[in-house]
Image 1 (cartoon, rainbow, N blue to C red):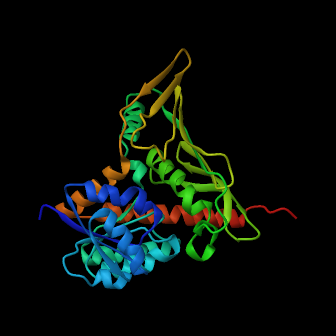
Image 2 (cartoon, helix red, strand yellow):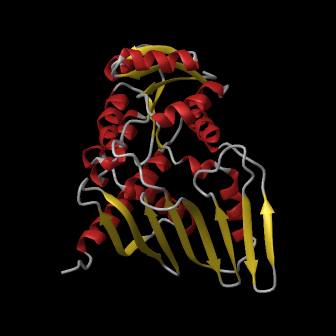
Image 3 (tube, rainbow, N blue to C red):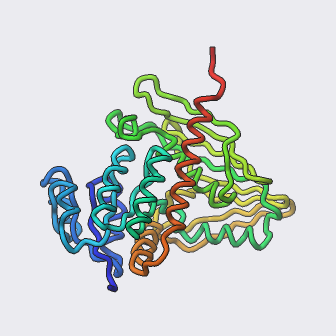
Length: 326
């Protein structure tokens, strides 16, 4: 098989703006169908991207000729439909975070391994070539020995009806924005990160966390991450070493037309390296399709999912256990 037959389970905004265009353009993918709870919405999406419309998520999973599904449902709904898709024999690419509980993540990974299926968490930013370039600079010793990583991802206040204000759908800043900063910290600091402290600020009306921060440690490396959805926009990370610093702006959401600039500061000079533009959504789709088509051992993807879910859960628990005002 030289093409992966993919369907989309849910008509989310991220699917319309980013993932469906990437799926429909990738030569290794054949976009077969898109499903919504309502036929009208499914028909609008299907007409725009040249595939079939299906009413109902289960009806999509029961259709023949579909090898894999992309699931952009809200975080609180993903686990059920990921499990159903795996039970139906489909490879799954799901938006992040995959689940809102580490135990559920383990169960889904175990199910995917039992079925011999690929389960991938869609951290698209990791597939942008700029992060590989940053890693190469670190490996070359451009900042000496890495000592500390810091990341910020904040956005302005969201409309009142946004699903990220709903705790029942897995809303909140930690899952939506903090997951990016935590995943980036794991990318550069290694798998052994653990929280030394954390704070989550809760909205008393909605009950979701609207901002937060965590201090993480892993051997000689420390990481500081901050995130929120009541702030000025910021998307940046910094790697500090014994001899210099690397900084990347627009680290998590660079448009495909923007050429990222990596700044390298040392004691005697500053360099700004402008890299080629790249489309991390297209790269993610290609990585998912080629991995599924190639087959083999998908264990690494499952281990990564569990590590991420465990660390997010430990950050939430650390924040709950921290000091509170009288």
